[in-house]
Image (cartoon, rainbow, N blue to C red; front, side):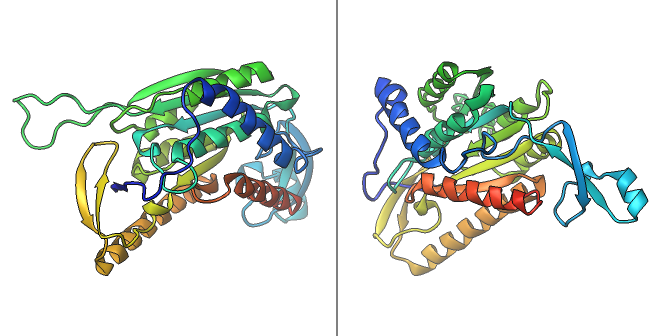
Length: 332
């Protein structure tokens, strides 16, 4: 889907050293003020660790993970029971951060890239406490191969893009270094392979932990759905979807030049046509519904952040909903 040019200049985090230094410090202060109190005395993360220590059993409820069925108790009572586990206090959390060219866009208060960096900062702050280890894999685009006279029709597809692995380490100093590496990643033009990025979290196999995928999920679901389901078999998965309002509906501003940052294709769109705006909104709604359905089928928790809203408030609400779900004994 093409991205419309920004109607009003969005607020953007400064680039270069400011981005990786003072900006990240302000983000950490902002996150700590709003989230520390909310998670006081709770597990150090947005999702509880899957745990390895067995707890007590309880009756099965719709939505519970069938892999935690307590078969001996089920056989004795003739009613389905699941075994609770005590969440690990020391977790290993991995982030898959998608910084493809489509993230370098925004018409709200922020660019999508800035929301991605901010979400990563919040996650790092929440999980680094208590000796938790956190690592990341970062992906950006790959430009299509140069055209030669031998091509006929469409050019061959670009490779999986640039994929970088940042090892998991404990400690605030290491966490700040990881954030600086994420924020300092240069967004390259061209398409990236979100499926290959997610699959990096599957290799090598790791002990059960938490995996977080941060992306706009504009890639086709069939590209990343299977790697995400494979990841969910072993880990608790959180998918953070970053959305800009212009990706959901077009404004009535007359002729609008739009460009796809991944391919460089430029088009002029007559936004005064109500039929065009209606078809665009329907296509965008269907696209987002397909993303939500694929994430739900994979068993991943789903958090949507928008560039025109308070992303931190949305994260706070998500954390509160996760805590409420846990107190009811459900998995979501």
